[in-house]
Image 1: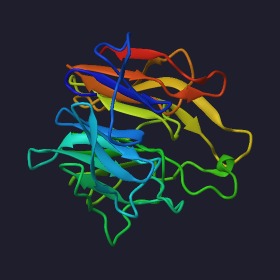
Image 2: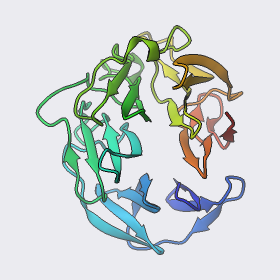
Image 3: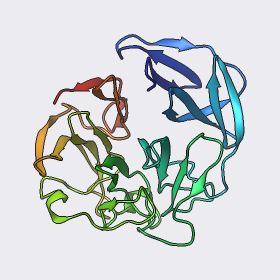
Image 4: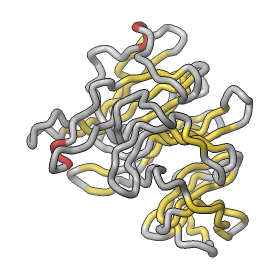
Amino acid sequence: ATENYLYLHTDGKLYKSDEGAVWSVVETSGADVEYLLFAMNNELYGVTKSNSIVKLSASEWVDLGVLPSKFPIEGGAVLVAAAPSGKERVFVVGGIDVEGNYLSSVWSSEDGAYWSEMTSGRQQFTPRAYSAVVQYGEGLMLFGGHGMPEGSITNAKVVEDAQLYSKDFGLNWVEPKAKSVIDSLYVPRYEHSAVVTPAGYIYLIGGRYFGGSLTDGKLYDDILRYDIDTDQWALAGTTFETGENRFAFTIDGVAFVGGGENDDTGVLNSFYRIED
């Protein structure tokens, strides 16, 4: 999402909407975009099939260069946040690289062209993919994800260190203070969504759980809410349908969640507004 529009890329086409109900095709040129990566400073960035990062300028995708070799091409948790410098930065946590390796890295950039690996040379958390990350106070909070599967993806176990905090925006990661740890309401999961509203709530939405058995791949429809002021987690409701890989974001002070997929209907076309 940018200041004015929501964007969606599917089946090789880019769509935009100003309120999420009506979508129109955006005609573009310049690159064959595989997927959208993030929006920052009111500009949209995508990744091509050749792993180059591109930025949309007017209606043309402009090539900014090839992504680093160990950059995640799928499953990375992406967040745009105002870093201590005051400038917006994009963070990509964990994920899977082009060789299929599960990563314990944090990549960051201020412009989409130059990327720094903030965890280079050290492992602060177990390798994982399909986590969710939000800005929490003056740092980052990381939820869930799964590790390298043993054979089949259905053997991909949820990581044991399922909630981590970084007070220095990705350099170091530790278990969060006790009062902010999710209680028994939360079943550790992956492919879930997370968003922080302007009112100070963290929302975790849906996702999937695997404990390592071929029969326990459960999808969730719950919405969990954390109040930063009171340090309390609560079940805020449900999305009325199970789902994973939904997109979640805020625009004009309002939080939205939508899209994704589930086992019953495949791709989901539902779109929700979260009201505190």
